[in-house]
Image 1 (cartoon, chains in turn blue, brown):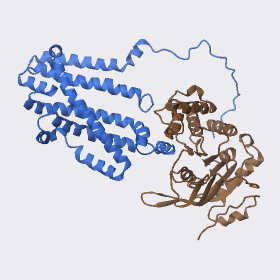
Image 2 (spheres, chains in turn green, purple):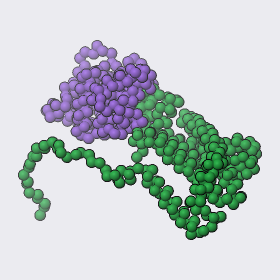
Image 3 (cartoon, chains in turn orange, purple):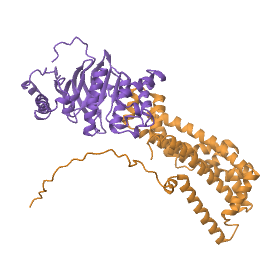
Image 4 (cartoon, one colour):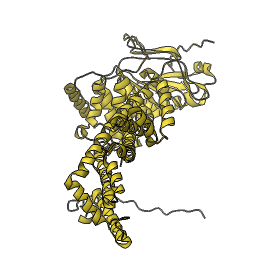
Length: 288
Length: 282
């Protein structure tokens, strides 16, 4: 027997306005707190610190693994004496220079790549060749060419930033939708104005992630380079601080140096980059 | 019927053959298509998918160069995209997500260096008011509904005060109710502003409602099948007998007597189809 639903009576409801029912409700205090990213992340850091301290107490060997409390003391001392901060200033100074130089170079290369076929080929060949090459492997050569100075560090820093950023930026440009390109061209945009007003904002998610990767690579390369290079020059940054204190078996200071490296990384990620993201990508609905 | 045309046609598409390239083939999208659009026309390109109607619109916009033939707008040969022919696309991402509604409308005026910042803002607000979005000028596109995005795109195009407005299935991605509302609003806007419109669609009903003249294209490659007047129809005549009859006639022209036998067009009983001069150079 085929299904034969019964004919049911129709009905209409007249809807009175809902006056007493609130349309919005507030989240509870706990829920609102949990929405705060920095709070959740701080909690994670706190848990990690506690685990570290427990492991150190269990190990009970200052030379191999100083605890969280001891390292914090060394850190505070280093900061108060100004030694650590001056090392940080030296490192950051070189780092920012190399990073900016890398960014400029990457943008020149990608702009070339979007405008000419030869530029495209150049970029793809160069990135394929040099992106896998660790920047630190170029340090001996760089020292030979530029001597024991800032120029050598800048050379390896630029190398560590430029390829990953160029690759990401170019991939972002490639991903810009045909419609948006046509909108730009429709209003007569071309050349650099087209890159600046259409391609860069439309590709910003990839560019920001390229900037992040470039930053991490640069930071890593700099510390590694200083471990080698600072040892021979006598005037070094944070990497040199770590290296020197390891030689003198101040393990807590080694840890303090590492903690500073980590802290700067966290600060840049959570303050600078997340600020950029909040004011651009999230606001524009390009990122959740 | 074009009894008297004292006006110079605004847009002349003359024997335009368009081709596009895939990795393996060169595909002919349209073959020697000719038509003319008068100032104030709401001219519709109608045909099934594969008839090259969108490609034709992009050629008028200047994004694609004709393989043969030429496109003349207001006495000038079209050879590149320009702000005198503004396109409203189907895709929602035609609005730039990094700009607010107002900035999106201003963008067209500023990017094309038509107006200074202050005048651009005034004109943007004027046209946003016309499409009923005054309350949303500072919203970002991702917070808007599909219909609102389409309205912003239309406001942005109209703010340019282009010689001709090109619309590429602008309402195809909207739901049926919103689409109907948008068609109604578009006609109201036309009544107020009196722009010239070239409109691409694959919906016979939409063509009859929106257009005053319809060019029928047959597929693979696109060739002109007929030109039909539809000035008499609007949203309220959809149930009428004349509307239904014209819709059936278009359907027959497009789908039943296929493009295989082009000369059959002369056997058409339907009255004044001025059989367009589509001579074939063989």
